[in-house]
Length: 276
Image (cartoon, rainbow, N blue to C red; front, side, top):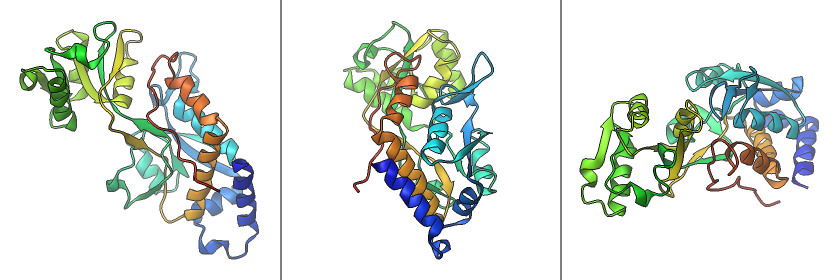
């Protein structure tokens, strides 16, 4: 039912003479060409990457394909990364960006956002088999990037385990590669950061690392869209919600982050579905 309503909405917009009063350039271009240009990553495992066969694969790649299908549009998938998506979206080179984009207030002046489709949370990356829960980290060294919020999170985490030397056992490194190197050399018991970041690094050595949940806080990831185009934003949101309602989103999520996936990450939430 949700999908039918989304399609009807799409067709009605095409027929309303005064639709330009609330639609913008992106919506008009997409409708006129029947093609949507979606930016997705090509260098971030497992969100978007080139696999061993040279094929473009990943969670956001699959999500983009289904998003276009649910909007009844042809897909033009465009390679972006975390440094290029902003300029490409601002210049109109893509119609939307799916690139692990955390919805932040600081981005609101430039872009609009869809409803969230991914829910990140702090995790601890450990050597596989070394620890199974946060309680196992008591008395161990935990790394965090210097100056990041994860320094305080790591200290709080160790204190929760009853570690009297929590402050001393939080080791700050200048950047993420340094944290990862220290863990790989077994100099620390774990590295605390966002789940998305840790999955990307652990993919460099498949099977050697695993994640431990480290809190209930959530950062929401959403599709970045051109600002001031409510018709386009609505169409994207309706399609995402239809994907949640018909099980498409869960199927894609489980493929990449389910218990049997190479990078399991239990979903903290699901896509919000608005009432009819």
